[in-house]
Image (cartoon, rainbow, N blue to C red; front, side, top):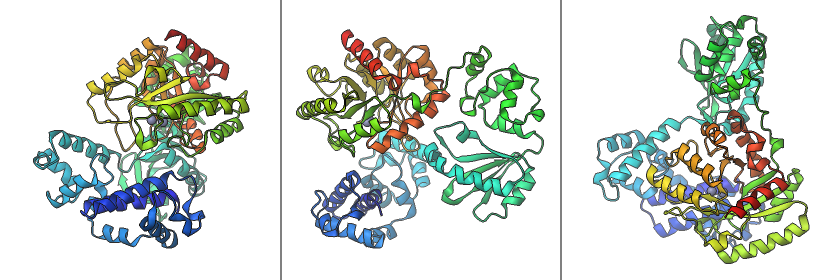
Length: 558
Ligand SMILES: [Zn+2]
Ligand SMILES: [Zn+2]
């Protein structure tokens, strides 16, 4: 059992104790243990058991429970609590925004035991009658549940990725000699999806017949055009046949957005799909350069292709440095030196250390004194590691009024500042816009971090007017981050073309909390490719010299 799993057990234990009204002091201490364990850099399973008790934040009772978990893989007190809790109440714990105390009221006072019932009660206006549940909370609960229900059964691109390879080899065996191709949301690199889609060059009846033999495939929906299967791990697979349509036409249709497909058909009405051996042949007939599935979104790309103006695809090798990462000075796992050494080993030219700022107390945010210490330490490291360079940065919290959480004197000591919202995320658009606009207008803001605060499939993000934000970034020479974490991918790629029109720079940043996190830049690149972002317009593709020049210019304008 690894640390993350142990932390999850403690966190669930704390929540269930709160729901059942048990000793709240103890519950709090288990929540702290969960937090501590999650942040440890060493795996508890590798330590001698006696040493567990001396780790700060674990203690006697926590230590005993960790030993039980490591030895048996289970925790008896947790099992007892789970047994006493209805499934629907456990499910409510997945809904961000309703904490254990509220769930306790919902269950014990309102006698509601499922998510569906809760949504219904909100819509009947019953929730606001209870203590601690105003009109606003009720509205929030409705929105969160609707989002939760919509996302249920969906998976992030990064989660699906690992399953596609084995699935392909399975299909190769089962459907040989019939051709097949993975299409749809996965092929289009969409950020999340509810199914892997596959076109098989066979009739739907034949496909159904073949798959009925497969134990792990449970047919749950049968349509005119496709069959939907549930597989292990509740990931769904949608299989299309080719009864009345040539294979390549079916593949092309499933790999294109409606907008793209409409405009393509209007532009090239005479394509003979039946004569095409692959999708490349479709574009050959059209007389334009091949447009991969992941770029078949907006019609504008067809215009670019017609005029031979498709920009080169941004690649992982175009990333020259890591911008936005957290070291163990705040909530990261690695030392700055370890991160720098790892970046050097990847052939990168620089690293931008942007630990959390002082308002982020939960993430050990840096106060003024520690910032000074960190800067001295970075100076030392830079001497040692030259020509590689570590830039001094901070992820400064955007406060409720839109100001950043340091004085200008401190802000001016950084090479660059990333401004992000981390607190009070539940706000109406007007308030979100006020906070973001003030932060963008702050002369010390270099980059606007994760624009909406969304967490794909679990938190919607605060509402913003993307156009106004982009216009303000253009006016104030502020870079917009494309946070490459696979659950963020924020700014949404659908808004990138407007940013490019307005000459706003983007920056694909991993927001890494460990060395492994560097690799997340790839997810940022996959969505940036959809929006035709070029290396000239991506800050993290700037060479060290170019980045220095850019930052000097920005400072000179302040
Ligand atoms: Zn952040
Ligand atoms: Zn961050």
